[in-house]
Image (tube, rainbow, N blue to C red; front, top):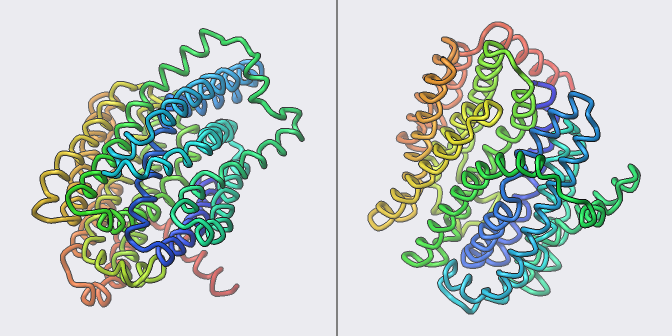
Amino acid sequence: MIQATAVTGLSTVLNTLLLFGRNKILAVMLGPFGIGIVSQINNFLLFLSTLASLGINAGVTKLVSENHSKGDLKEEHRVVLNGLKITMIATFLLVLAGLCFSSAISRHILSDPGYGPLIILCLVGFPFLVLFNFYRSVFRGLMEIRRYVSIGVVNSLAALILVVPLVRGFRLSGAVANLTLSYLVCWLVIQFQQKQRSQFLLEIKTIRYPADGRVTGDLVRYGFSSLVAGSSTLLALLFVRSTIISRLGIEDAGYFQAIYAISSQTILIIIESIGTYAFPHLSGIQNPEDFKKELNAVFRLTVILVTPLVLAVVVFRNLFVLLLYSSAFLTIGAVLPFQLAGDFFKSVGWSLGVALLPMKKLKAFVAIDVMVSLLFLIFARLLIESHGIRGVSIAYLISFISHVLFNYFYLRKTLDFRLAARNRWTLAGSMLILAFSMFLGRKTMLILSLPMLLAWAVLSLDSREKAFLMRKIGWMKSS
């Protein structure tokens, strides 16, 4: 698991740096107002892509992984073609509807129908975003980790290269075009790779391929769960951003985007790195005791990696804001600790919830995600009037604490799962550090952070983990 996590982790770090580079350019060239509009349209695109895939990408990963491990290439091929057919039909219908109602969409998400042309512009490249996500789900199921991560790097690199000429030439329209144009580049790269494997333009073959009712049914069953869960999260975020725009203004939506991006992209490094390995691997484990042992390992690795990362961003948050955005965004420094605390619990909850789909607990998976999204939306609307953007981040923290509790107690009831004793101590130490980072001043934390982190490592890590860490430190010094 550590090797697969390391490969994905390095690529995720690179992707994050490239994404932050693009955000930096957008922040300097467009300011908080432009960032607010672009982020809301991007949120709309992500929500639409979840609808277009009907949530089946998780099912594609699981079924491809199962059939690939059995060596059943015919069934594996059937899963891919059926999944692609479903995705293409749904994408066509959504693009058609979006083009017809672009002004209405703009009025609802940006409080101004005048941005309708920007909605049309993003829909033109939208199919390539959907195909990008679909192909990555296939690569993930095949455990083609290098291919999975390399195409992600291509996407981030293309977006960074294209952003300057597009924004310089077309300003806001160029920034919106940049949201999807990089996925076209990725699609062309994938087609080149497919040609080497005699699978060039699989989309054309899919049109002529007759749908298989059994495979389609399996995908839709998994897809419905992922669709409801994924769309509820994105829809809640879309509504929260719309609330910020209507009550505080588009510029404040730009500030919230900076908060959300710094926090979520930081945690994504961990979640995507571990998740690329953990989900297909857990799907292949049949023995309940082995499953619980592996889930404890996923939980432990997540907490050990997330804790120092969150602490570093909290302590050096103003530096991160200046590096990744601009001095116009420095006011968000006071809010970031609450958002980062929320993402800490998000990653902890994810490390438990990752077990639900391999266990085929689809209803629980959906119910938990929907409840968390509703809590975020409700508390955000309640707290935004009195606390502004800080209230949104507090709502985010509350919702993901509940995410951890929902997942843990459900697994305890259905799987008789319990955290290993050492994992409980590690989590307790991490939460204590997190509490200090939220309520102590930045200068105080600058002094105390390193001693606190060293004490946490000494008390939390076992001898094997400490030896591994010391070897890595020795390697870095020698190199």
